[in-house]
Image 1: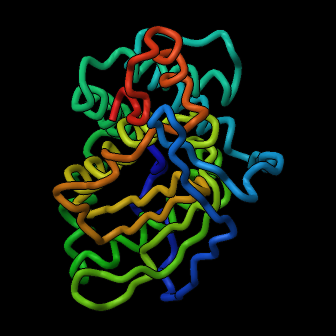
Image 2: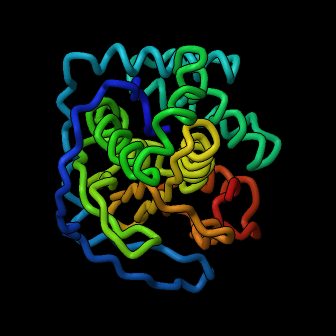
Length: 262
């Protein structure tokens, strides 16, 4: 759920550019006697970056939260971003399966746009230039409108399936949504999979999202189809995942290496 905003006419003509991803973190894995996998973050122990909200950030947050509350049928007493994360956790718990959670998140994304806008974009904009123009446009709108949700990000160049490169990528330096939720399942089932589905099915723009659970970064690749069998579903739970923590309290013999919702 990282893509908000109106795309038609919202971005200037794109300028091709390229940038390299800067990985500033190292990750080591160890397997303790309990058999669960832990992740040791080297360099992540520093204080979380403080996000400075922009002019329209409160408006975007309130709009998104209201749509999320309507879908869940419940709201948190916590204000602001903390309350948003609590409602996202409730969305996860409400879903009877991964697919129902993904479907709920897609409905939320669709509800953020005026009627017919998505259909017009898919019909009129997506086919131009083999889809590259549409991919570059949504990349720029994502950077302009979604930093309140996921933190600092920038447009970068990605490799496309036809062998060319295009400035249709978005690199999120350290995803605020993942860092605050602390849950692989919330990342994949309320963000990655529904966002990929939303852009492909309702805007005509293929999208592959590659979250990094070691340093909390994420690479968006607009114009690239996701694999049919995404290995991300096999990712172990984060050590700090509150959903896994609850399972540890309920049953010592439960395997918590996998997030309960992945």
